[in-house]
Figure 1 (cartoon, one colour):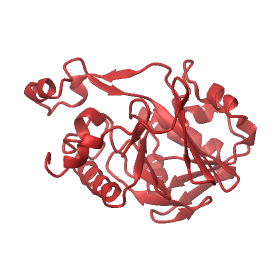
Figure 2 (cartoon, one colour):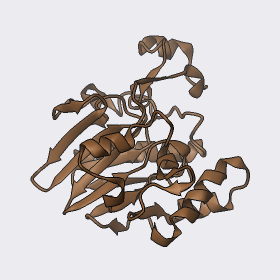
Figure 3 (cartoon, helix red, strand yellow):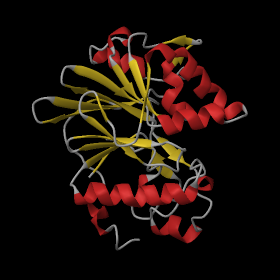
Amino acid sequence: MKKYFAFVSGLLLLTACAQKVGQKTVVDGEATVITWIEDKPEPTLQPHNLYPDVPDSLWIALGLQEGVPSSMSCFLLQTEGKNILLDAGLGAPFSQLIPKLTTLDVKPEELQLIYITHFHPDHIGGLLKDGKVVFPNAEVYINRVEAEAWQKMEGNQSVQAKTVLDAYKQHLHLFEAGDTLPGDVITIAAYGHTPGHTVFQKDSMLVIGDLIHGVALQFEYPEYCPLYDMDAETARESRLRILNYAHENRLTMYGMHLPHPGTLQ
């Protein structure tokens, strides 16, 4: 695997200029802007026990004895006159999504489109506040496989997803992997982390959701899965396939758990 990803030397892309801590804007050509929004205001170190199959010797070799650098983030894509939110963060008291959208002159009621990678709480929690819709005029897009899988799940883990689906039902759009969404955003299946986990491509930009949780480990060793991957074998295959696709097509990846500045190339 290490040889397969020899291009890891270009791990973190440090392009564009940081506007504020936890916020970075990249301009692609003249018509498209993508802004990294760090929902959790301080950096995160993932514990080793999130990756139970990784030997201690590898943590030491990688210099990750203290943990794996991460973030909790989402992205604002502005293209063709549209404001598109890619995931909505956790919606916790510390969440910075709404304040940072405000600094970008985007009010919640003005947001037009929301594309969701998957239904884990740190990606959909910001869609509701005190049980009420946060983005009343936004059309929400989710992979049909993902929506139907969570609707069928039992137990507490599916309650939030079902609540969001019901709250936004008048503005909900279910797509199939491979569909092109408004703004010429292409949807690509990256299943395994969740049943219908999806990545989004706009030109040379690839928003990878939770394809990679701990980049300092998984970019060089993509065979290792965090406990959050619901189907580890399928998630591993998706990670290898998407990383190879991004490399072959010279795409810049934008990830919800990548540390500052939220990008990979």
